[in-house]
Image (cartoon, rainbow, N blue to C red; front, top):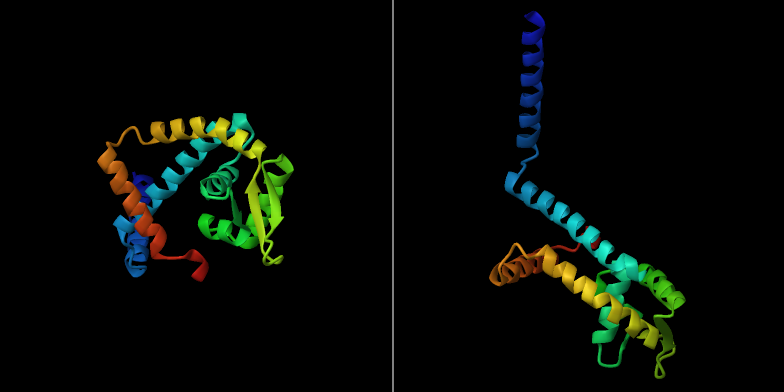
Length: 172
């Protein structure tokens, strides 16, 4: 019987310690729940996109670059613009473009007016890869959000855009 009471007392002390820690740290439980839910949702989305793109031999970041290039009027963008649109650092974009170039899906082109500017252009093979990938990705998107009516999907997009535009983690 004494051991049972000791265990209960220890549990209460740990709970009190945790409660004190949370209070001292000024935890906002709603904010914590939202961030954890975002992290879980990110994991679900990432796994779903990996499943959709895996059979095509593509990754989410490669797909996103190809989509940005394809959507641009010339089918090409300066690497700095790709980095800005995808919220990636220049070295990360360079590595990603290296991989896409090795796949034959993009080619680098120097800007005629300023040879310091390097542009990534989607190739015919890149268009073919995108043509194979888009149905799988768009079907995965629909499956992921099928639990929400259109108005809620629009609300979700607005809320996430607000969060994404609120604070740049790179600025510290």
